Every structure is written in C-alpha cells, then in structure tokens.
Length: 261
Length: 283
Image 1 (cartoon, chains in turn orange, cyan):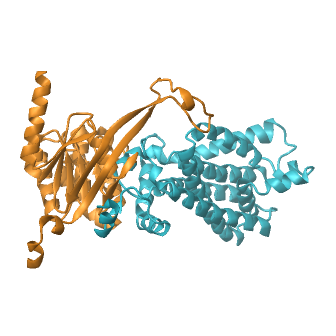
Image 2 (cartoon, rainbow over the protein chains, first blue to last red; image 1 turned 120 degrees about the horizontal axis):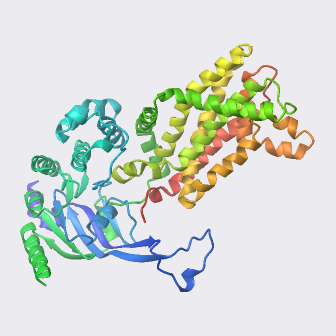
C-alpha cells in the first residue's frame, strides 16, 4: 500500500466511468415539420415519417474515478438527464462511447414501478429484479418501508401515493443494495427535509463502500453536502468540471448574469 | 491515448453493449423469481378490480364457449358439428384463448411495463416470459372446468389424462415462445398490435375451434395437409385426442407439437436477445 501512495494521483486512481466524446441526438416524430428531399420518400415498412432532430448532448467527455460522488448541475433542458440515461445504457449515443466498471443503476424522476400494485409488492419486485432472492427481499421489506417512511401506506396501491412518497419508496428500494454505480436523477427533489438528510447520508455511506454516485439536482446545498466533484452541463456542452465550490460559484454567477439580462 | 484500450486495461466495459447469449440466459435464469412474482402480482391486482374477482377466470371462457356453442352448434345448423360437440368446443375455446393471450400479452409486455423498464435493469426477455406465465396461471382453473365438463358428459378418466399433463407443458413452452416472438416482432413493427385482433380472428376461424378441420377439408386433401402444420390446430387436436372419447392422437401430432414447443422458444429467445439494447428505448 505504501508503495502505491507514492505514485502520482493519475496512476493510482482507478477509473470507473469514462464518457468519451458523447453525442446524443433525438429524432422526434410527429412535430408536423415536413421532411424534404431524400427522406420524404419511403414506404410503409421503411418508416420515413416527419421528424426533427434535437442535439441534446454535444460531445461531452470526462473520466470518473473510484470513490467519487459526482454532482451534475445545469439549467432545465440542458441535457443532464439525457447524459445520465446514456451512462445507464438506456439511451443510445449517436457517436462516442461510454465505458463503465459495472452496469450503472439509474434512479430517475417520475418512473413509477407498477402503479396498480401495493408498495410492498413493488418492493418485492424491485428487489427481485435487482438480484435479491425471494427470501432476502422478504426479510428486507420492513427495513425498506421504514427507510421510505411510508409504513402506514405500504399496503395501498402505488398509484395512490403522492409524488414525494413514491420517490422516497423508489430511492429506498434502490438504496437497499450497495450499487457499484448509482445515478440519482432529481429523484430526491420531491422529498422533504428529513428524507433529504437520510438519503444524503445513505449516498455518502455508499460512496464509502467504494460505490460511485452521480447526483443530478437543482439543490446546490445537496450537491455541496454530498459531492466531491461537480460537472456543469449547459445546452449540451460540458461547461465546467471540478471542485464543487468552484463550479457552483461559476454556475451561480452564470445564472445571475443571465437573469439580469 | 486510446480510450478503448485504456478502458479495457482497467476492466471497464462498454455500456449498453449486449451480454453474450449464455450470460444473458444465465442472468434471466437467476432472476426467474422476478418474472413469476410479476405474473402472480399482476394477476391478483387485475382480479381485484371486479366484484366477482377471480371467478371471471372461469366465467369468461365459459360464456365464450357457450356463445360459440349456441351460434355455431345450434343456430347455424347442426350438419357440421363434430362428435361430442360441447367437450370439443370447450377444449378448443379454452386452450386456444390461452395460446392467443400469450401472444397478444407478449406483444404489449414491454410497453405495458414501461415503469419497470425505465427504472430497473434486468433481462427484458423476462417480461414476455412473465406474460406467458400469467396467462398460464389463468389457464389452470379453466382446465379444472374443462375436466369437470368432460366428466359430466360421460367421458371416462383414462391413463391418457396423465399424458395430457405433458401436452399442457408443451403448450406452456409454446405460449412462452409465442410471447417472446410477439415481443420481438413489436420492436420492428409497432403497428402489429393494431393488426393482431384480425390475425387471431383469422387463426381462430381456421383452427377448428367449433368444427372439425378434417371434416370440412376432406374434399381438399392438400389444404388439409397444410392445415396440419398450423400449430394452434395441432395443439387442439392433441388435447382432444387425449381427453375426449372416440378421439385419438397420432404420432405425427405429438411430433408437430413437440417441435413447436422446442423450436419457437429457442428461436424467439435468440431473436429477442439480438435486439436487447432496443427494448424499451425511447429514441
């Protein structure tokens, strides 16, 4: 170990996620815009419909090392979620590539599991899908319910939950397991103060157990409290990447100047 | 520096790259409990929405059988009625609806579980698999009803009823294969769901649910030979031969059914795996 620490930082730190010149371009159909030229032709099976392209991420590159908790900031619609979905392998890149040490788990906003089923059944299903055995997850149901703070509503269908409750439950399910790479995409923004502190503590715990956490948030306090590095994405470009306080200061200066204009 | 090489040296893999076929099967098998739990939970929640609850699992097919029986067995004339009509019809309606539902629910299994697909990573093939299991759980009380009907109409219990268990297992495999195949097709051709009702209406009327394919096509031997390869018709022939008196099963029917039961799931799972990255994608 002593020999290792003598080496330079770049050599000893182990990369866990590499994003290399990533471009994400969405094709959005049904906008009513007429496609002209070659694309206008095409039969039923080749499916040439009217669409427009949205360039959501324009060549972003960074390398994340073991034990880092990365905050992702930027204004609404700047491409943060697209980038996170690409890291999780849920959106394909037009060009460039993403490498990761393990399959990242994305905890996104608004994704309900199965609205018709009770909270408890959703916990069991989520746990089984994450690779727990039936017995393991049955033993954990109580703990997860407690963490989410929804004990009295656990037998109600998830469609009856408030957005805060279902976000808490989803986080509790995902956080019951130590993930190598966990991406939390604004999933905590609807939670209350108490839950925010609990979940931030859980994320720090996960980081300490060699997990990597990405946190997308508009709460600079959350980011400062949990993250060791911050990446700022603006209109699909990587605007800054580095020390949390410095990047957040730059971001705040940027947003203030644009509101004064 | 070559990023790809740097990533490989540190044990990093490309995200979104599909796993090898064996690794895929292995993970699917490891998470099979998830698929079964999804099937039972979904079933329970669907049944809970009606006043009569799970009784509809028996009532719906019984009403359907009764309706077809009255229209095609009595109103439209009795000339083409096969022997032991009620047993023949119930066998056809119940088992056909299982095979049809497996296919149609498989087709919507990915889009219908968008919430799961968005928030959890698991082999997507478990969704059509689970859809078929769900239909199979629904089939079990119907088989009970079918057996009771058979006894009421004086069919003796024979050792062939044991072979019927084998036939049901083959049908389950066929159902799982259909669901995966349907899910795979909808990836390429999303409009399939609109066409399915018509396709199955066609198969329904041509598979001999309430008439005997053999009787109707006796004048057209070539057409009859072709119809033999219709898997739906084969499975119904197999079940009837085993359960209803005066009907029998040929070795050809067994081979055809076994062939479909092995071939369809195998081919479908390979085809499904080949486009794994595309399932549930939003772009």
